[in-house]
Image (cartoon, rainbow, N blue to C red; front, side):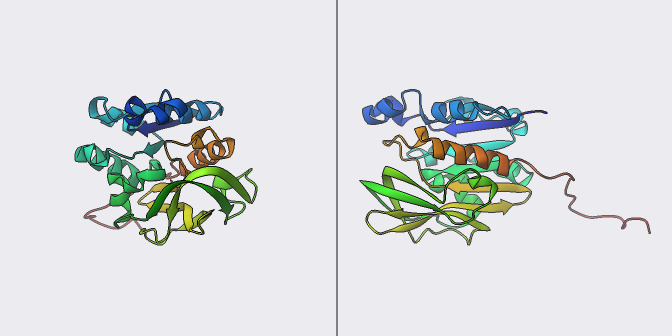
Length: 240
């Protein structure tokens, strides 16, 4: 059985210039996620970063990617629009997309959502309790009904996204705010999962539960289409 081909994309910028980030993710957030995913027999994960040619996402690589994972923060506007178009077409054709934390402001997520994707936020070492709202869903298989992150960045409602197909996780923060922290969408033949935790100055991606949810989401988001969609003018219908 072939492995799922996963590309973990990260800007790869802050760990170069921010000592606090470098202490937690010396080789980048992407490195931690890739290593965690590659512990699973059914996943073959590799990384791509902003400074690579074509941001590490040339057409031939995307064409062979089953699931793309995206983390971004400070360089959303630096992403070439041609690469965004390329990712968008691949999602519509069936590639899975997992959008992490501050990538809610990424060009690709905003294009797929068609909204501002804005929200409230606060960096203040907030305690976060993340509750499962869809027990039995593939993305939360093996997860308790909640888990706790002792320190995280607060994201609060209203989150300006379309009504999700499914809300899998919601968060409560020590300031009293709540947030839809795990939501799914289908766009064309592709599946999209947004997962909130993951501020760069906290060790969130070292957390085993967070790692498990991302791995589960890879299996949920994998391409499922078994037929090719046909569009445009048709000369005649199927034979009677």
